[in-house]
Length: 436
Image (cartoon, rainbow, N blue to C red):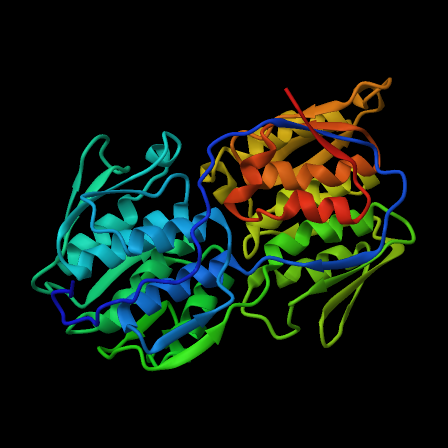
């Protein structure tokens, strides 16, 4: 099947599709008695993988990808890119929803994009409005501004310029950027506000350029001339977001060390900021040929003051680390966490309270902690952590087993981004068992 603008037929990936799981048993996590230093083979970056898959779908067989992520989100992208079904279910994969909406707008046909109940609450109007301005026909099938949507391939480009706010989601911008070379008139994207999570847009631009597209960064946006992706290969880097949980483990365990394989000092991923954040939380980072070596330094800052706008996915992990080390601070740039897999601010407020910290908003988008001795766990009963169908809640709270026994609700939620997580936790000596 070819697109209206003559895009090459995309090849089906040979990567094995894993079974998609929606729920699983709770996990009993025993108190970690002794940290075993080891090597961790991190999963590949799903952020890089999902961008590369769209580039490959547009560029065809000569775009060769290696080391694609085994995460459920990436597996979902692979499955849907090769599907000819009328309805495509992205499950809970926000990146997949946004990227496929733009891709389908230029590839032809008329398919429905839908997802989980939570996905149908996550806004998509900004992207739809921009694609409509370009010339795509997109219908809302349930609630205006939200999935499910029916996307028709555009037959005529009506405009070569769109204006979008950058402060809502960089995924909208990345989605538009990646299809821009295949628009007959190219595309200029004007930003009415500064980009939230700009490193993710930077990643998109660099991957596009890696495969021959020309992207001109303007003072308030991007200009992408008409062209096509060229032949080339790319090996996806290990995932810095996945690395965050291991930074937390090392920060919470004196004398510990780990080798995180596959991380590069010169990385496209914005979550590389882990190094500077966790330096203030007692972790020394040293790059080696095989990856990144972490060592517990014990050198804690008096307080952590940080703007998480470039890396909001790190905040859950950092919040748990700070709670257990009783490191206070001020945290900004968290507005996008309200519209993720769950409202992550509310979820953190609920679950951090179980560990003895109140996360409160001092003023708009400025958060801090209030540590409360009377809220800290007492007795031998494990602390039960609700995960809210959010993979990052499960993994961010797992290092709390350095202090308390835990029960993690629906442990298989980690399959969304890091299917090997619990097995890797066993490598450091963590006792884990399924419970009814």
